[in-house]
Image (cartoon, rainbow, N blue to C red; front, side, top):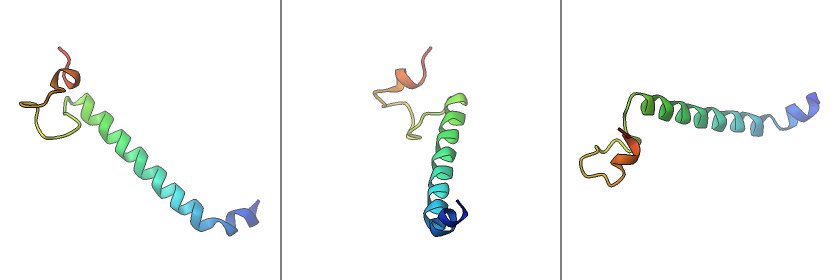
Length: 56
């Protein structure tokens, strides 16, 4: 098992970094949604999906 980890250390590190980045993005999206912010950050005035983001 240790030999496998050592032989594939670079791949494992890259995978861990990618997973951490994806988790961070999802967590930020969830926090922004809870704060009432839109996901596109371009404002809601002319957005055709404003009713989807901010349900009353």
